[in-house]
Length: 400
Ligand code: AMP
Ligand code: MG
Image (cartoon, rainbow, N blue to C red; front, top):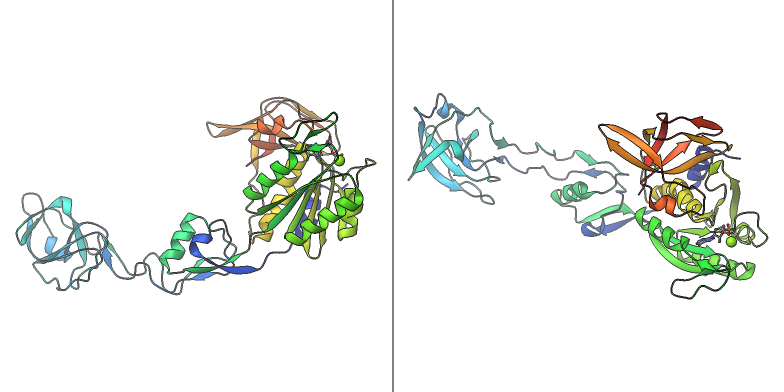
């Protein structure tokens, strides 16, 4: 059996990064930058005032106090968006607004709150140093500077920066389209009555949501029956439509597990037994350069295997360089025994208080007990064949 790390690394090594495309800036949220961004302009593009106040020569305010103000002549008012028309010379000031261009001759701004203007004179009650309250050309970003690296996920600050640098069309990685198929004769779509022996198809919906949450574009391909020919037809159609295929069920050792046979026909598929609980049997491979994930049918296994394997793969396809959720240490609130030779990914409630994180499992942890994930906000990793006491440290990660 492969360890989770081994299986995941082998899988990730084969995952293609999708090519880039140009998108309009407002369609770039949720995408990853495909080439580094170099600044074509300075930010700010000119020296400007950080305050509403008066642009002055700092030397003219030396020694100014409430009792002995400096009195300067106001030569003009400069609003944001307009260029100054007058120079400031000794004994002079220009009324200036936040973001307005600094006039020649002035080297500082006195904030309005420590001044008093009457007609074309202003009293200054506090001295300023040279450069005070001035924002200089290029102090935020210098022309030519490498501002954002390729591989960076475009969050709102990056989008704002792209706009600040006049980038209307941006080269980003394509987000993967992911076809999702549930398999099993027992599955009933929502809205139809449950006949004896049948259950609801929940995996397809959970996987759909997981694909979206991972930044992929899900394509719902419905339910495949436990019939080889029909399953093959559906899988092939699905694969033709998408960058990746995710199936659930049918990869175990049951008589009606036709998925394995069909997947083996589609491409280079490994049938892996990964040393993890939930989710031992799973299939992974590539067909026509497209990743295929055969997830186990049990609802918890399907969700957890997606989280640990498919999510990082989709992130890689979309150009991300950070593929995993951060892990940290949590303190167990209860004793836990794992008799298994497989690492147990237990569903847990992680609580942060006073700088410490505690973990409490969410009750029965069977791989069919979906509620164990509904109640959880994280996963904790219980190593193989071990008993941990309450107070012991475990690896943990927040989910979703
Ligand atoms: P399988 O791997 O196909 O043998 O399925 C394992 C278990 O998961 C069985 O109890 C199935 O009924 C259940 N199962 C399979 N697919 C789904 C699904 N899409 N939604 C809910 N349960 C499923
Ligand atoms: Mg099945």
